[in-house]
Image 1 (cartoon, rainbow, N blue to C red):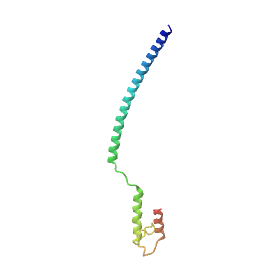
Image 2 (image 1 turned 180 degrees about the horizontal axis):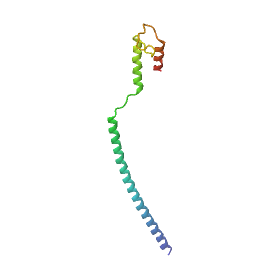
Image 3 (image 1 turned 30 degrees about the horizontal axis):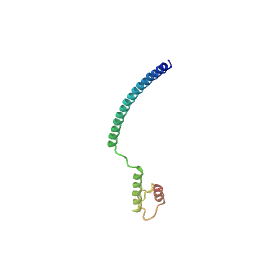
Image 4 (image 1 turned 30 degrees about the vertical axis):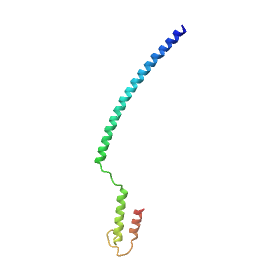
Length: 109
């Protein structure tokens, strides 16, 4: 009698285990499908990003452009012309201009 009860309990546990395995198999299949859809979507988005990156040229850092402008102003100043907003473009006649020097020192900082 006791053996029969144990056998029935084991049979019930076996049915529960089969149900659990079936549920896990379904969930696994569902997750695999979702994963495949997500991979496909990721590939599509990656391709779009790559196309956009190829079409849009990268901008040069603005700091380099500013540095080049300051270098040009310093060259103009050394050639004997004002670069300050007070006397811009006029000849310095060999004299240093405090406005120009102040401007250039601010730009180099």
